[in-house]
View 1: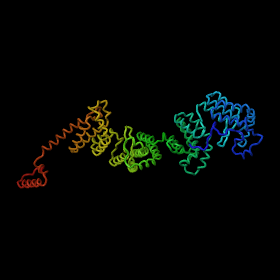
View 2 (view 1 turned 90 degrees about the vertical axis):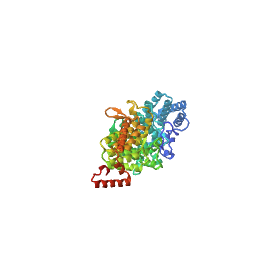
View 3 (view 1 turned 60 degrees about the horizontal axis):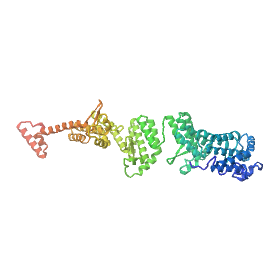
View 4 (view 1 turned 45 degrees about the vertical axis):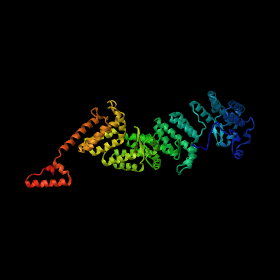
Length: 592
């Protein structure tokens, strides 16, 4: 997050805790009593503290120790006296009066930091514990415009050493980013330490920023960065909720997310993808996930589409709706923009992945329609399919087996399925071939044609490729690898059988011949437990058809010849019929 305030424990431009560190001189003159002011010359607590800070920044550790020890030795008695006079932190207007307490504790802190940076952690721990035990009311002035408690800083240093962490510059951005990083690597304990530190430092400011936005829309663009505390504190609560959820503390997680919704409705989190997302909306999603047993994962369109597919396959239609609707809500605008940018269909190669929003949103609509269709709501499903074909004509869906298919074309198929009462199922060649067989066996030739044509249109190219790689029938233990060849070849066999049954012998002959010529090594699995060879079966069918055609040719009579001879033949037949009737003979029925 872009921040307007930076908190540091060791990178200050003005490190004096004495009265001269206060930026408003007019206020200082009113609030600070002259007798409490320490000299600002060389050797003063202020000059020694400032020199120690400067040396630390330059990593001149010997100088750090020199300046810090001199301040501690010269003013520790006064510092302890001032500490002993307090039972709580003094009011802000009196804080500069406790110059010795503040500067001695700060020098101890600087010395501790120098020891940490030199990997002398045991010595550093002693220094920080000295601050906590003996200078608990010391405060250090931050140039951002406030005091910070030195003992709290010392506790942080001990915490960082014990847990091998680093609060860095203490900005809310640094802390929330570190919390996210630890959460993503499942280093949950450390993530919570970072989150809690951010919350403890900035929640008050976050609530003030939220209050200033009451009744306003979410800040957009660069304006959102102005509400850094609101955004980062809410994000840290969100991270804590995610961790509680992940560690099966669902009720605590639900309460944490509800706290975000109630207190930080305008908070936004910056996504490294380049946009803000509403932390409150995310919290509502998390509550929904807890209540419904969902998981939106990383919220990417591909993740949501995949989860929607999985829910469909399991018949989890309520979950399907949540995943699909979430993808549509987040990415439909981008999907329409991508569709609008296209002047021609996208090739079915790696280029298609560039249109991720278009593809995934259209796919989620497709999945929604499938879910409706499966639940008997065909009319509602049909409306969505028609809408897909109209609004997302160039959307493609990636098949895990290695190719893209047109979502719009699939939608039109399903409109056809609804109108014709058929079901392409999962569109696999196996499903289409099985359905073709079943339709043929029950005499539903129209449905069989749909299944056959769909299988051939989808998989014939792959079948040709598989055929070209064979020089003989594949061994039985390898035959399943040639799935496209087998199923397309089988579909041509079924097609030939249908035409044969309909006495369309020429068409049947063409189907069987194509099977022999182009898919000779296809094999069909018999449910009884073996493969058989459609091309061999096709040869038998071809012989049968040729026999029928030859027989028909031989059985043609003069009457039939005359009947097919046009107008002259018809005239001859009429004349013959008239002569037969006059002579008392019956006219052959086959001639009529």
